[in-house]
Picture: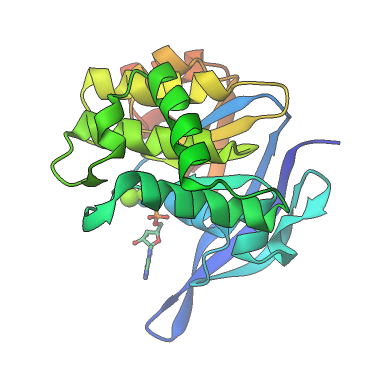
Length: 255
Ligand code: ADP
Ligand code: MG
Ligand code: MG
């Protein structure tokens, strides 16, 4: 069966007491092992889609279905989704003064391991595993000893997030504009982090404005989203077309 299958998904957000429809019938299938990108103008509902998949509670699903590895994803609690391997990367990493980065990462990773019925890492085991992954991601080891994101450069924050993703070993990673405001080096870090996880049992949904990111990532499919719908699906060449022509022609075609 398909790894992630979204059919006719409709969702609203509460807008001062009245439901505001945002997703208006999303159809999207991601087979196991594939990396898909979503591009689209601001306000299309891209973040809404990622929040609905992760199970954020401010959204009401008003139609459609989502199955993930044969399970009804929408019927699962956010923690159950995380335990099933769904990982949503944060758009803006938080700085936590006074909180040790390794301990913070270990707490997050152990919560997921517990939910999966896996043995938790003690401090020594975690550090050993995290150092190995950090090295593979060219991340300076001392970032593990510092306070969470405090004084980290943009690139270091990215590496830290990619490290967290790698330690959680997700089966579906959703990256919602994890690349906004990043320089080319940081785009490569994100791309390399996703590429390092590529396997037949790993899929990713990467929401981005940057065609450059997709040069490093090379998605299997690119989806163009606008006004709560997927307007077009194609290969990586679609991202190049968007870069060259902008969204206007897609919007006109769909209208
Ligand atoms: P994108 O990520 O593609 O920029 P979003 O999913 O963030 O789009 O937003 C889609 C639409 O939903 C936008 O019109 C936005 O203004 C609206 N929206 C998002 N969050 C809220 C909210 N909390 N209350 C009202 N409208 C919202
Ligand atoms: Mg936006
Ligand atoms: Mg967004």
